[in-house]
Length: 288
Image (cartoon, rainbow, N blue to C red; front, side):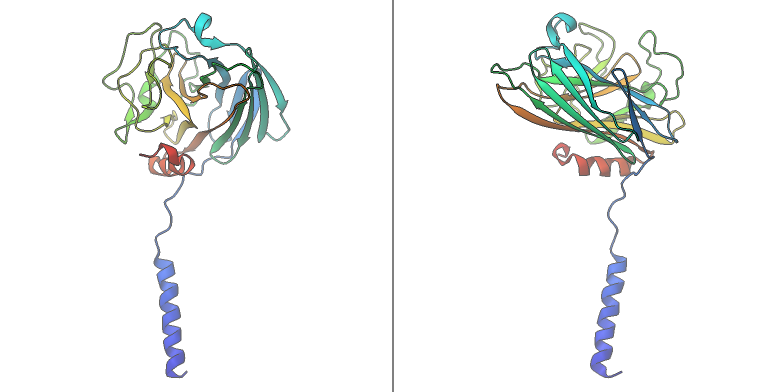
């Protein structure tokens, strides 16, 4: 081999070695192969590795001014749900909600590895503005957290497995300060900076402002994490039925207006760093 050929070979070998030494991208939590089904108003999430998770989908559409309002008489906008597509295979469901004020909300829900993806389109076909400001998917996590008994008397036994993010770090519940007074008790609400504090769930409202939109918990055996997030989101909420919420924001709809909302449920191995990498990839708007 002549000198020039030798030099070229050395350069190529060096380049390949450099490529091999490049650090790989941060890992993302992959998770089990999830399936979805409908059972009345429930969205049921299953896998061969994790306990069943049920979501009251949707529990309610809500008006603003809800923090200190009567839930039934003043806050909730009644709606009817139609299952538009529930094909065999457990991987995709399409739902249509029709609100009492005429707003139509279409939900396309897709199951994958370690996640359920939600694509929501809210449209106001009427000539009047709608006061639909936010909505509640209520995620029931008793079985996932290792509790087989029904959630009677507002159990708090699962709280030590639950978390949000405060000042950029995961904190387990309950933590100080923990609000205890509201129109309805118990529970805990965290209102993000972009939402009026008068427009959230009428449960105890924490003074803590969450540093991102992720809320979740650890499985009963400690092997998996559940987490959920929406964009845009109205609040994070710990409820009274071993449930957690990231409730999505609509913000009202002008006559003829359409808004698009997206969400995720994650069910992944218990690797916080990998979960955060996945969340930050999916919701770059939440990173600050």
